[in-house]
Amino acid sequence: MQMVGSSYDVLRKQARTLENEIDLKLVAFSKIGAGSSISSSNSSAADTSPLLGEHVFDSLSADIEQMLDKLSTLNESMSELPATGSAAMHTLQRHREILQGYRQEFNKICANHTMRIEREELLRGSGLATSGSPSISGLSRREMYMKESGHLSSASNMVNDQINIAIETRDNLHAQRQAFKRLQTRLNDISNRFPLISSLIQRINIKKRRDSLILGAVIGFCVILLLIYAFN
Image 1 (cartoon, rainbow, N blue to C red):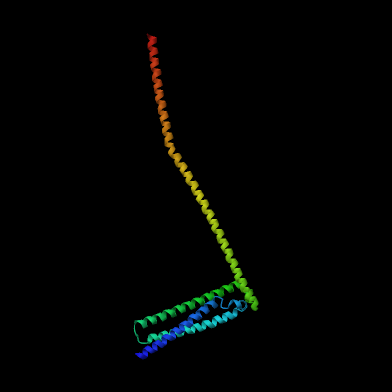
Image 2: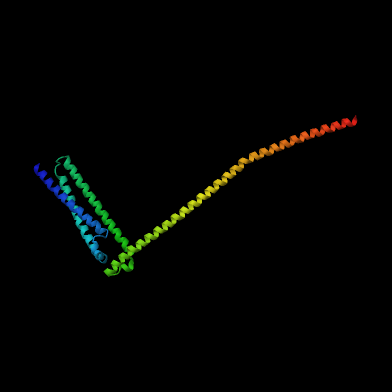
């Protein structure tokens, strides 16, 4: 049992040491994959020697893959030992999670690097891609980034223009909506006033008929009085 514990401790120390080394190499690997592996004092060399950066990236990628495989082997060796308690199981699970995280980060860096290379190849064009001069290659990379920045700026301006047009259209539609609301309000007012006008006209007609009847009755009474006076 003591030999098992000693073997487990040795494997755990090796795993921790290897994890620290992988962590450091992943940091450098990420910088190389992003195109910033060389310091600012050697930035001109980075621009004029892109193939050197690719060689370093491939070499470091192979080293990290070997280290990840070795860490996986150590984890398997620890899992094959008899369990010495819940703490040991938790530690082994933690080592597995760290290995999985390292693999995910490694794959992510490789994918981002591939996307960056493909984008540069598309922007470089066939004419510059066949150029064999390192200085021209470095210059083309700067030009590519400048062109890409210009394209992004133009696209941003176009999007802003479209947004402004959409805002103006929205304002115009809002103004038309308000105008239609006012027109509808006026129509409702007029329709509400029509019953009052009709009622007023009806009352006037009734009053006219009543006045006509009164006038007719007065005239008739006067005629009757005249006839009585005439016959008498």
